[in-house]
Amino acid sequence: MIHGWSSSWYAMSPLIGLMSQRFRVLAIDLPGYSQSPKLPQRTTIEDYADVLAELIEQVADGPVVLVGHSMGGMTSLVIAEKYPALVERIVLICPTITGKLSTYINAVVFPITFMERFGLARLITAVEGVVVGITDRIMRPASFAERTGITEQDYSRPGAMPAV
Image (cartoon, rainbow, N blue to C red; front, side, top):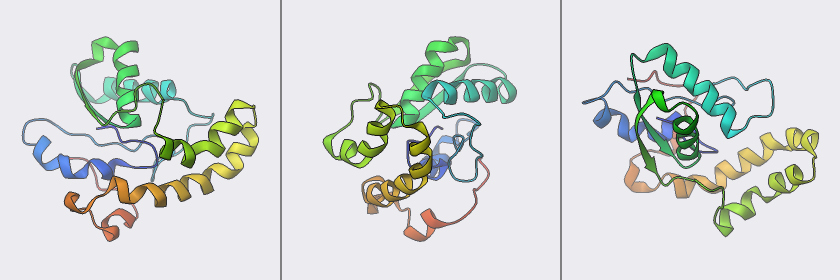
């Protein structure tokens, strides 16, 4: 299970119990999210795909089912494209596939995309933690509707529960 941008494995937690009835489930935090350490370089979707392909090769006996939400959907597609022998099938949940986002999301992430476009990588690194924190608070209501059963207390809980 691969989460989206400004999220963590916990966004996928409502599915873990149901999925674990049929599959061995591993819900991960991508590098730089929650308690997962950042990669040494500025990370791309392809970098996430490479890291996850290495993980799949370490923990799986054969092809896996990837469940990707939002950016996790895009990451799943890149894994399937680069490492087809590792993927049995893909389940995409509200995937970001083309990178063309809604006006709302673009307005939230505009400062980062603007700086990237003009090669201001150092400035991005300096403000990214603040921007991700702000966008997390802005996007949280859309990500965790009441019907999910995920409370603010659950979401804010430090640490990570081991995957089932």
